[in-house]
Image (cartoon, rainbow, N blue to C red; front, top):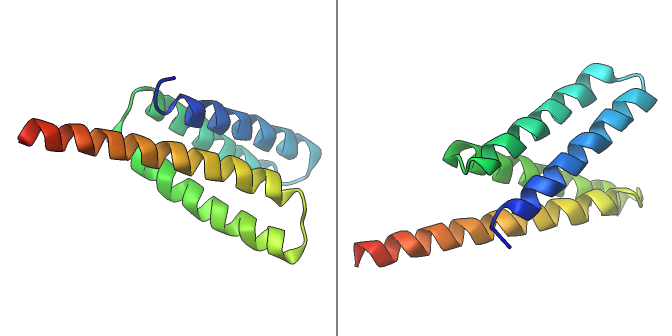
Length: 108
């Protein structure tokens, strides 16, 4: 399986979830903005853009932290978001480690 493919699928899935939440709640602008961010990051990760990889890592790291706080506070459904965020962060870090190891081997 190619690197970042899992991250792309999960970011797209979270974008769809955000659009659903925008439809169900009254906070259209907030959810739609983050859905567009997710779809933009999916496009950037597909092209393996360095800025998109770094942005996705920071964005999902913060989202993982906040999901864990909500989970600790008692929101059980935040566990799903935390698990998805953890899988995305793990996939991106694995990609970064693979790219840096290839660069180190080329320098030697």
